[in-house]
Length: 260
Image (cartoon, rainbow, N blue to C red):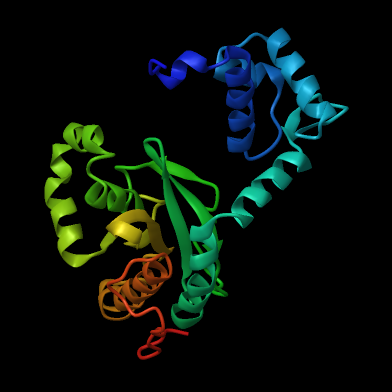
């Protein structure tokens, strides 16, 4: 059978439905058909038919008085089933919790999606002052420390992005030398992010482990002497559980210098 580009098989109506669900997922609250029509470039009539179908199956909920829409519980249920089957998430979650207990800063599991990075899972701290939750948020891959991990360690997949941003070359080389990257303010003013790569079998990049907190608490000395060693150890432990052989899976996080 002759090979075909996958776009050959795309069904436009299904694509439109998926675009609509993605747009709803990115909204912080309810939104109207007019807003969605302007954002997606689709007619209100087309959107109304799609919304009616989604609503009948519980993927969308509509507020009766305003006619505004938001994602329904069925969409949440599907998302939870997907997360429950993710090997990366299963392997990373307990070690993320251990890292947070040691350092008392928020940890995130980050994956690449197209030309963005998605902050997939969060393990939170009990500090009074926090950076607003990034769980479910997407950022351009070249814009933050977590994203640059993917540029540094998955250059084949990100060849075009790297070519379009030659100014990143020095930073990416430093990242590969240190096995980590520290960034400031790219995830919000006054924020600091420390990111390390996660590897699986065959030395393939599986994701990124990131620690995010307010910069006043993650000053340079604490970041380099306590937080960076801790997150690198956590990343190595997760990688070992994913089949990467350069680390002892039975090792435990060091509690020396803990900020808890």
